[in-house]
Length: 137
Image (cartoon, rainbow, N blue to C red):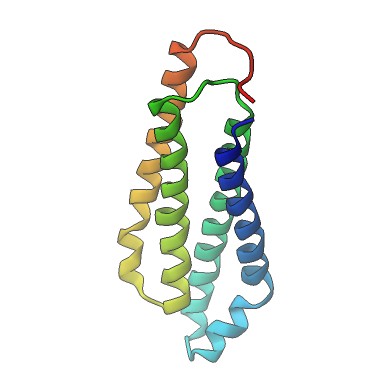
């Protein structure tokens, strides 16, 4: 188990659950309180939900990667970093877009998607190039 990666997974997972709970139980009232019209709220709630779902999915991916038997390497570090940056840019931009009703932040979201595509692609490279080995604890 890689402790730093597991810690990142723990923080990402816990924050995804907290943010998702807020989205399900408090977000709509907050947006109404901000004076946002109903049509805009109807668009914003699914955006927030998308951010939370992808956030949690990638927290689980980081956790699975923490348990993977790959030795420490620059490639492994890059993969974990790209997963984390994907959460920040993709999910974070959606959270901010919704909470501030600032549509231009949607232009930042694809950066996070690209980070995830790179992470998943590099994971494939790591799987192809790694030799079978015992787990690194």
